[in-house]
Amino acid sequence: MKIPLLTAAMLFWLAPASQAQLLKKLKDKIKPAEEAPAPEMPDPKLIIGGDEAVAIDSSYEYDWAVYQESEAFQGNQRVIDGGEEIVIYYSSTQPAFNIQLKSRSTGTKYYFFGDFEKESQLQLAGVAGIASGDKSKLELKGMEPVYPGEIGYLSELRKTGSKKVIAGVACEEYVAQNLRHDPRVKNTSHNKVTAYVWIPMDPHSVFPGYSLMPEHFKLQIETMRRAGSYPPVVMPLEMFLEYGNGDKVFTHTTHIIIKERRKIHIGDINQL
Image 1 (cartoon, rainbow, N blue to C red):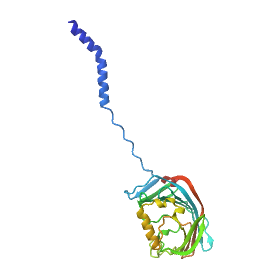
Image 2: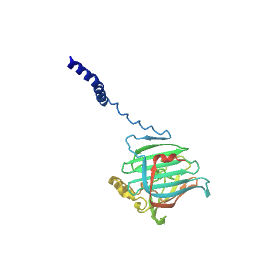
Image 3: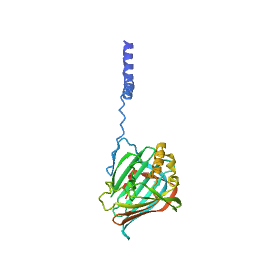
Image 4: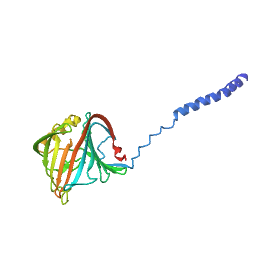
């Protein structure tokens, strides 16, 4: 009788330890599932629509900046608070650029992002801290970055033979007229009559990342240039537009800053 009693006593004293080990094993096996990270909620102040298949980044880095201003005239009278403030950012390490335009009269901001590596473009418009826009596949034909004069629907650009240096960059002059039947200008008071456009002779002089474009874009650009058109990949450094009703818009470069890296977030458009 002594042995069973002793065994029972040992089991009694060992039971708590055994139970503790058993509970630990059960707890290890029944670990609560790790919580999934909460999905990022869309920013209600920045709505981006468009082609869901197109990939865009939330920010881009550039290291060349072209600062410009445009002035508006009615006849020979300058329009007070007319025109826009413009910055064009280019990259030397990526085939990408960004245009930022702010209207002096309304305060509305317009951003255009072109990314040749992802073959994507993004157009945004924002005012009073709220912006919206669309992303789409980047295609040179029909590509129209926001820019004074909306150069995307100008007709064939013809070289005038004139050349000059603007902000240290050698440029050549082109002249063009608008496509009168384009629905964006048809039956409006702003049928463009003539556009004088000064474009860098060497695109790399302001957009070093130009050479990093995928080959099919380079071939397409060369084909378009031979045909007399100029895709809006490198923006003019100077442009003078004369409208049919006598209005004029003059866009000029104030200065160019090179090799100064800057990260541009898409949401920057909402900064007041």
